[in-house]
Length: 286
Figure (cartoon, rainbow, N blue to C red):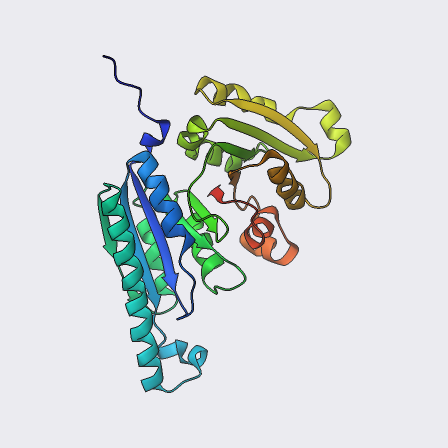
């Protein structure tokens, strides 16, 4: 009796799940549930890095408390980070996954640098995305993207578990977009439907089909792909957000920071806009 072929997700052999506890009232990390369910689908090794932001030294101005009070807060954050890691490790064991965990207790900015350094050693890093309530969320994602050389999957609180049946691939022909498509290939191959979306001026779209150049490559890899060229309505990010809803996308793949982060911060940009208001989890590569 022949064995069924392995899932394309099996190409993901090690997944890092990172979360930073910076407040005693932090909600449960969506990255943990999402990352564990993705690792289970891929049968991948899991590393849990549950860090606590240690408020001491140059960080004392953030706490608004005495040294003794900050020490108490630090201990509580450390205990919460350890509890997250222990719960995640237990869930990984129940799913039959091999899991390692670490709970570094570090001041800023070392807490960000530690996670980015660990990301270099994994196929994919899954991180929390909550720009409204977590000071370190965007900075951690950006540091992992820009300094690890590995892709990042940023998960908003609205998506606590992995789903990848329908994937939107944002394509603009850039180096970053090509890198994202290549890094996301296991997810694209495992999806039931992948739509390549290019956003542009209506007149330009009459003369070109921007996604046509990448579609044959994806098809040769067994990706069930279709093309959509969309006229820009509002910003590019708004157009992508709207189409993600129409397509019922589970996930969006895009190249991150085609322009410098400073320019995107000052003038606005697609990556930063989507990170500030993500309709679905974002698979990002730079």
